[in-house]
Image 1: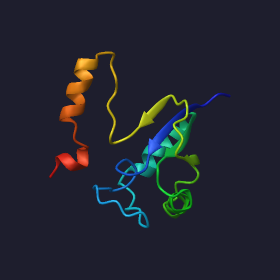
Image 2: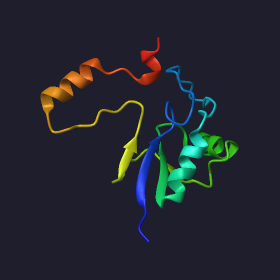
Image 3: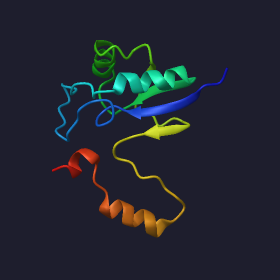
Length: 114
C-alpha cells in the first residue's frame, strides 16, 4: 500500500526552537508533537524528518522523545513529498508579485512573538 510522504522540519515544528541554534543541543519537544505525529501515522502517511542537523544527534533526540515509532528516517534531502511542513516556508500560489510580498513580510511564528 502506498503511503503519502510527509517531510517535517525539526526545529520550530517538533521542538521549542526559538532561533538560538546550537549544533550540539536540540531543544525540548513541543507540547502536542507526539500526538500530532501519531495522528498522521494512523492515517497511512510516511513521516521523515527533514533537517540540516546532524543525523545521529537528531535520531537520538527522536528516540529519547519516543517518536521513533512514527518516523521512518531523517534526511537533509528534499524528496518528492506530498507535503513539506516547516516553520520557515511560504507556499507559492502561482503569483510572483504576491510571493514577493509574502517573502518581504515573512516572520517565523516564534520570531513574531518578540
